[in-house]
Amino acid sequence: MNEILKLEQITKVFETEELETHALSGISLTIHQGEYVSISGPSGCGKSTLLSIMGLLDFATEGQYFIEGQDATSLTLNQAATVRNEKIGFIFQSFNLIDELSVFDNVALPLRYHSQKFNGKEIEKRVVTRLEQVGLSHRISHKPNQLSGGQQQRVAIARALIANPSILLVDEPTGNLDSKAGDQVMDLLEELNNQGTTICMVTHDPRYADMAKIKIQLLDGKVLHAPATKPLFN
Ligand SMILES: Nc1ncnc2c1ncn2[C@@H]1O[C@H](COP(=O)(O)OP(=O)(O)OP(=O)(O)O)[C@@H](O)[C@H]1O
Ligand SMILES: [Mg+2]
Figure (cartoon, rainbow, N blue to C red):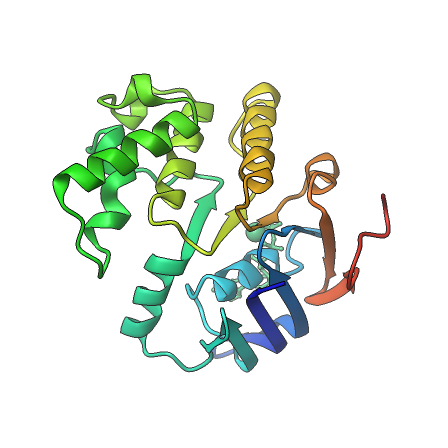
């Protein structure tokens, strides 16, 4: 199987003048194409820090990191931004949609910043296809604040997928949703994975963590349990 992400002995220390926080200590893990990985563990154990490093939003203090075989450990900020835009799709608890833009323009955004130039027709075709996939093509002209929380998260998922990323990195996708909307978002992620999308998701909810085929537990910045080949708890 193709390796999408590979972390080797990743350590992250946050330093301020009076305080040193060891957020991650010696994390090694590999995510292959088509996998659905969940990362869970108590508050403060390093889940979001790990996801930020995977998504090149932050850099490790020590260790090596590869994205599709390319060394991503010492990219410049500009290089990291390009790799992030083209290979990573993010989904956060707080949707992070732009209120002033329509659903269409929110979803189209990553294509407008892509190094590959897309013309208007291509952009429209892709946006419509992705909105159909998340069941929201009838809301294409709405603004985010005219949608329910669950709908906003599904728009965010369409945006995350629009540039055909190598992996979706998902941090507490249901944190701002009621249980029904949360279940719908989780069902959609499962369906996307069944269609081939590689997913790494952080969640507090053991029920949702169980939906992933590979379950990783973090404690105090270390991997507590990472099945190498197949999940132990099935
Ligand atoms: N920018 C930062 N500066 C200093 N310390 C930080 C920073 N970001 C995170 N930390 C610390 O790193 C540790 C891990 O934080 P992280 O946000 O990764 O936890 P988490 O597992 O995502 O928690 P939660 O479940 O509450 O979201 C915590 O002790 C946190 O205080
Ligand atoms: Mg977090």
